[in-house]
Length: 281
Ligand SMILES: [Zn+2]
Image 1 (cartoon, rainbow, N blue to C red):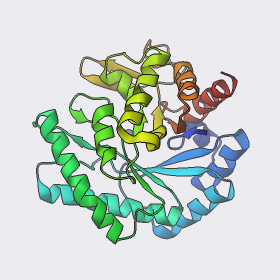
Image 2 (image 1 turned 135 degrees about the vertical axis):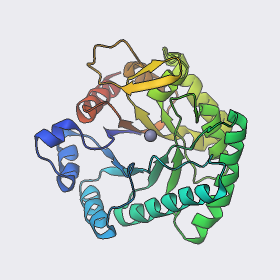
Image 3 (image 1 turned 90 degrees about the vertical axis):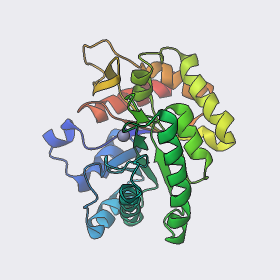
């Protein structure tokens, strides 16, 4: 099964004055089945509001994920700062409990002067510490932590690095951001096979559960150090990846995915375009 939907509110929702409480009904009317709620700038949504919003999503049967704060960094060399990241994850999961959201997307960590291997080892160590803490708080039942593949060379989160993080526990699921992967590799995601290679790597590493993934999709402009900026499908710049290749690969490899569109302002329109293509390819 593949679900499509916008990551965050799009410009059209602003124009049509669709506030957060009306988003689920709007998505259901246009035929989308997922939404990613951004807590990227901080976890300050009152639990009562979270519950009200979540109830609307349930009513319209829209799958709900959350993007955690940008300042989560499990590769921080300071243990004290890493504990702060733990607390952001814990407060995000509590909001998700109230909302009925099941996937927490987060950026695993930045290198901050370390080698990739050093940063990656710190992230793995911190995740191993974090899982029992979250289990003790009963925050992982029916929920997944979803570390994301990243687009800049100064961040951890290649496909293999994210797969390694997911190997730690069955409550860790990959967020595969195809725009990031294409930007990181300076444009290598240019064929159906290149997309299938990612799915094969996940299955090799995680077995059957590697076939259920969270995804971000947008075209992304990049430079020599990777990601520069998100584009819309109709942007004139010549940067991929091409969603038609992804859709073919999803079908070919039989992948169960929730695909959140991260276009720059056109998330809903572009989600619908992807969904239409998926249904006809
Ligand atoms: Zn992200």
